[in-house]
Length: 230
Length: 230
Image (cartoon, rainbow over all chains, first blue to last red; front, side, top):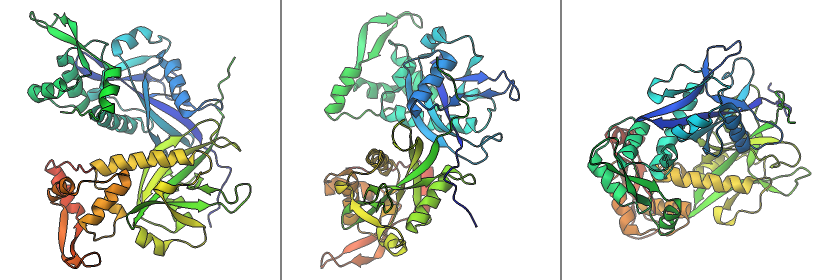
């Protein structure tokens, strides 16, 4: 006969899947553990929930303590609760993903931790169920980036349309037909063309754009649906 | 100075938002608590995670113990972790929603608990943050029903297109243009028309349909996107 235990208390962690984008690649910020018994093993950035903080606050705190990053896009996507996910002790982990501007993040990154950017196409075996977390986070990101303008969090303030397309190619792991993609972008009144060109990649240069949140909010109130995918 | 507590262990609950559909109404299965200090207060069905079960298993167990319902659609949608969400003791709750065939559920429902179907438009104040959970569950359901054929879980095995439309009207709380809606349904090869009519609502009768999961899987492999909304 089973007994029902009112006093059973597992540990409660939060783990952050941190996405960045650079040189056409979607990357993950991973840490190489430096204490036994997991020395040399790769993992996501995580920590235990504390008494005085909500889950969201715990995720933001872990992110800041472990990376130095503050005020970045952070979204809860799933709680992981298999019985044997951590062989040492039962731990429930609430998964969050973060989207950061990798160039800017690089400057803020604390050197205290052995954090490394690793291409999403080349993620090593991670401890616990962290590979499963990454897969679920990427799924959520793909979905979110299709229906909401969150992808811009991964780009610098000003970007070219080629960069934007290359971001979506990296997120979805597929190539994109430029014609169709540009047509969809042209309908987005909240993409503001700046009076400035990127002349690094061609002599003619490519216009810089920026995403204008207030214009997007306005368009949304008027019934516009963000929809962008390969 | 803050200290970091490795041994902090909140309670961990799962709560189920149970949706049903009947007579054109989207309903929630709620319970009226019968023990002090919350006697007479309304709440979702919940319980504490046990040592030998995953989160998903806990949600299925709670659902079965509290309602008698088995093998229903159950999806985790969010973990709720505000510090003061339960004034008695810190409890993290992982929210699941269930979709049940209300006619069938009625027969299975255990009479041991004071469970009541309440229209989603008429939900009473619930304990803790359960009203917020319901809102988040409904959001997820709206989203899911738009992009995946989960709505059929709320209908009987065979249904008319009028019932299907009325389900979507209830889920989204809005009326739907029949012409456009029917046009979209006609493209769904996985909706099989049966050789049988519902003659309750009109003399001419309305064809019964059923959703064929295998045909949907096939259509999906061939690139079909389910998309259905008001």
